[in-house]
Amino acid sequence: MGETFRRYWLPALLSEELPENDGPPVRVRMLGEDLVAFRDSTGKVGLVSAYCPHRRAPMFFGRNEECGLRCVYHGWKFDASGACVDMPSEPPDSLFKTKVKIEAYPTWERGGLVWTHMGPPEHRPEPPNYELLRVPDTHRFVCKTFEECNYLQALEGGLDSTHSSILHTRNGSDLTFLSQYERIIPQVEVRKTNYGYVFSGTRTVKDQKWARISQYIMPTMHLRGTVQQVFRNDVEQPTMDGHVWVPIDDYNTWVYNFTYSYFPAAPLSREYAEAIEELQGRGKGEITSDYRPIRNRTNEYMIDRAWQKNGSFTGIKGINTQDFALQESMEPIVDRTKEHLGSIDQPIIMARQLLLEATQEVESGRLPRGADPKTHQHVRAADDFVAPDVDWQDALKEQLLALY
Image (cartoon, rainbow, N blue to C red; front, top):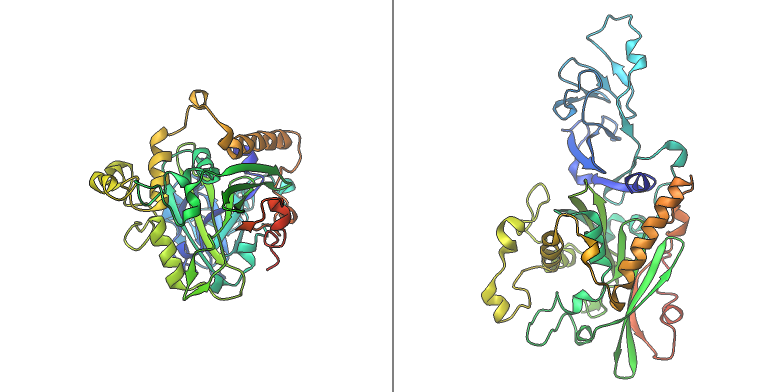
């Protein structure tokens, strides 16, 4: 699966982590590999091995200067492509530096994120083309959080459309969350696509169906539409939000969170984005400077048992914090032989099947599902009412088409 992930472009870090040219390098760990990122004198981001190829000294302590990162142990300097451009410890006429490179991965910066492809160059597709990356910067908000569990149980938590009716209820006595329609356990349906799958959770409300249509874009992106009851300044603000889960290693995950507005083409106000973050448990003062939640496993997520008895279903503040509490506390890697999956778990079952199919495609030398940006460039999620006798995909066809 690690080799499969290396066939996709994945976020390596936020652009805000490298705020200036020739600024301090940043440690990056992803797919079990230790790396260092730096922004050179021209603004290009380099992503190289965490260790100098000379004596394995840590490049994190290097000097970022004049379009290269210089190891402070013996002065070897490498540019963003990994080429050695200076070797002061060798004679001036030595050609040794032309024979030495530091391992480096290509980067592509878009949408407030630095993306990388860590696989073989001959299997490198074009960079991603999500609608998230096409909207103006004024219409987008991105952040990230550290999650202490395997990426798959984090991903599956996002793909589970049923748990919100239980886990995220605001009032334990009547299981109410966001709106009256969430009280009903949805009817779940999954339809495979060439990028992953589209899945629905439909609830019957009087003579209509309320359909929440989400998207799974391989290998670890979840896209959903904002509930239509969310307003900004008394004007409906249509937005998309979701996550990309990037494995740090087998036991830890970076969760990249995003929200963006698409129509009408109104900027995403900072107040709106901050309100969403507060609801999720990622508000001001809730995340450390290194993107770790202050409510975590070491303090039992600051669960308030009195509040759980008299108002909150879980007693834990923040929607994502509630997710983390369960996903991290299952086990670092869940023993799935002990699970008992039911009819509501179709998205989980299908995701596992698709990931296993992707490994087979990679083993056969083919590009796995969803890696080609043409397959996902028009993907959008939606939620709305549909007539009971109409197929939800037909009824919401236009809403599910991203043309921004």
